[in-house]
Length: 301
Image 1: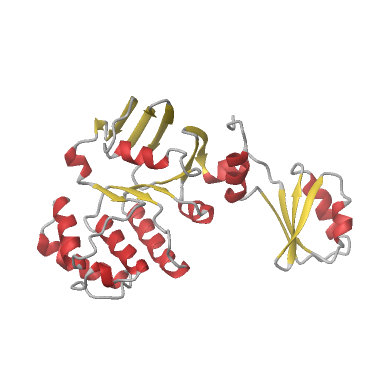
Image 2: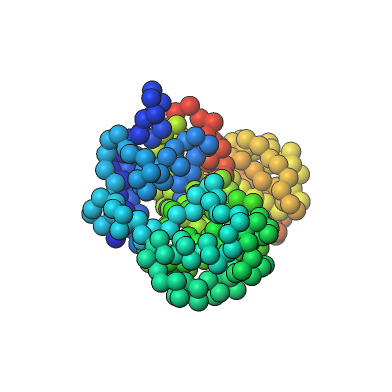
């Protein structure tokens, strides 16, 4: 049930919104699609759903073009939420469920289970306009997942949610993945992307500049970040050739180094007296990589 995008391009007048995009998503896989505003993420989602037509390339699901029947098996959470404020939660959910081929009786039972699981504050008979923003977002999430889709498209699913509710939704996405759904989502919080994604695609001005597993992408930048908790003075660490910067982080210090071999010299320095409270050498975080690539003028080879 692989979703494939092959050499997909979309133009709006002279602007190329998406340029020669190729990627695929397997069942039971989560793909994080990242990029700055205007990078082409939402345009990609809309092409998959056939809301807009592509100019070049091909998009297929299980080897065939996306059809109306295929779309019934897709769960889509748009960035601009689409709940009808004056309808009750139940009427709205049942309406969306029927659009995806569910029986009202089955949807009504599952709605109650979902509201308990996502800890929605309110009743199914409440109008959407009476719900808090967070609870309304949970209801929209339920509408997206109630029909147990084979493929999920989630555009900024955690926007406006507190950490507790973000964790609730994150766990449900993982549960869908574990039951074999293919998931593609966008998010501006790189911590969420790193925690959820199996693979990653970063777009910049419609171009693909990063593509691969999160770990391989991070490792490609080298283990150039060191976190250390030690009594060694800052200046002693800054005097080591190849140390680029040092900043306080929690009870320790974060050190940026020119290349990974410098980590050995730092380790020797902080362990001269034997014991060191903490020493970790790792690649840059996904957030750092995003910022580097977003500000770079040239795509990563």
